[in-house]
Length: 344
Image (cartoon, rainbow, N blue to C red; front, side, top):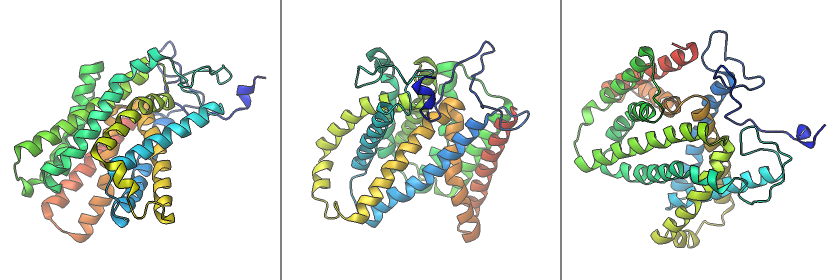
């Protein structure tokens, strides 16, 4: 028996594809009889939402409780940590970067992937950088209620981009549930329709870049031969140096060096857990997008926010239209999940 059979392999995406066009993966049963979603797909979606909520808590602690001013540096720390984790796990032959790759092959290159494959992921890395820049700028131009409302339309852009890139079509049931989500978002923000041309433009640009990024993950995940870990690795190799240069130009690294609580045990623990959770979150994003779809990933992003927000609004009764809108969006998200599970 080879050494690879004794080495634990973490779950990866993009298993081999059989003659029927379906992905073949041992133990990859349907979530339940008649379901269109596999157990791995459902677990990936649930894990993403859990990791996302926890990561927001730790990032909030660093930025608010410790008044740390450099969100870009936290992102840089998370990206460097993810690359270090991936390098160690691949070097120890615990994971692979290519679908169906043997873990006993010799690693002559420190990149673990060919330059041709790395170049193939440039569009994904470029989309990620644009997504980051647009998202950071989008929160400045509009108030919070309208920002939340406009960001809910990301799912529509995602469906459109998926159709353009891969001719992905959705059933009328799925389209209807998405329509309910968007309608609920505009109902929730109906009393805050303060128009700002620049702010609206940047938010819609953020929606477009988010849609392109997720759709690009889904497409490159199918065409590059990389699994979720491989996609994360290539994204880190390309985006890490760019983000480092960006923080240097903005002076964020200098501000970090002069930050008074930089070596505070509590702050270091928060940053450590933030980096660990970011690693698992990014893995879940790539896995959820490649196993399910970019639209499912977008819906999960909406749903993870709607659950606590809807509960808060219902029990505090702050705004009737807000409550109705959030409930409509929540119902739309649940319907989408139901139709996805049932294959309707």
